[in-house]
Image (cartoon, rainbow, N blue to C red; front, side, top):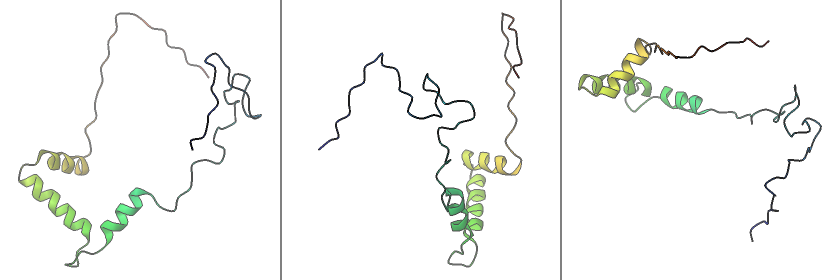
Length: 112
């Protein structure tokens, strides 16, 4: 059986449920909505991938070496994505310059 959720009126203001919120329902300055922080894990996707790539393949080479050789072979055959990936990993991604012009003048204020 589904849990019944009470209906909320559209114009109803959020209630202040704890002392870390202001009257309008926003968090007071210096208070977090997640005081415990993010859930701590003993693993990340990056750590799992690195661990798997470090393991030896059947021929005794690290799997990451086999992957790198496959990437080079694909690039040599003309695979554009492999070429881009190799260039990004060796030379770094190129900087992108963004130019913007406007007809109106805008005032920029620094708020400290």
